[in-house]
Length: 115
Image (cartoon, rainbow, N blue to C red; front, side, top):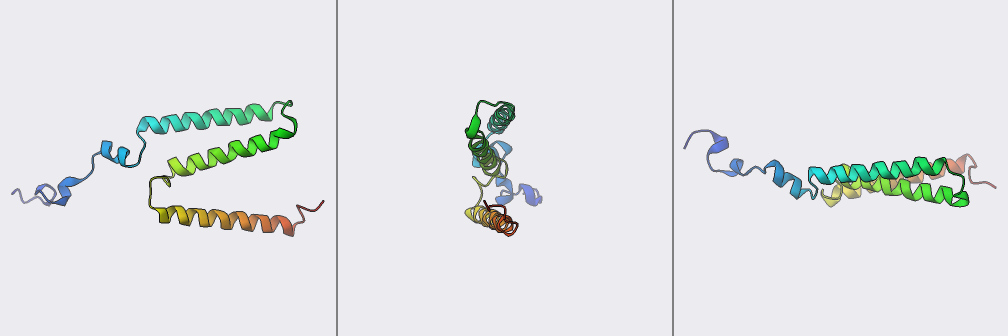
């Protein structure tokens, strides 16, 4: 026995290596790069769509769908909600729905939805 608590064969010796840390979270470094590239492509599509006129009335729904895809990609992968405890997801989504609800109430207060 070395006397060093970090190397005495106890649980302190079983720390996860960086490689096992990535696999426990489901994505490797290359996986994060792939998600980032996909987000960059979606952003490019959004910018391209904003400069084109041929989309007509489909412009806003297309942008909203792209925005939602980007939002959930960032939340699930970069904020690790996909891999963390379900309580963190529940807390995040509760706050999200509360914020959206407050925003909608504010829009009604200012008669945003009036014809």
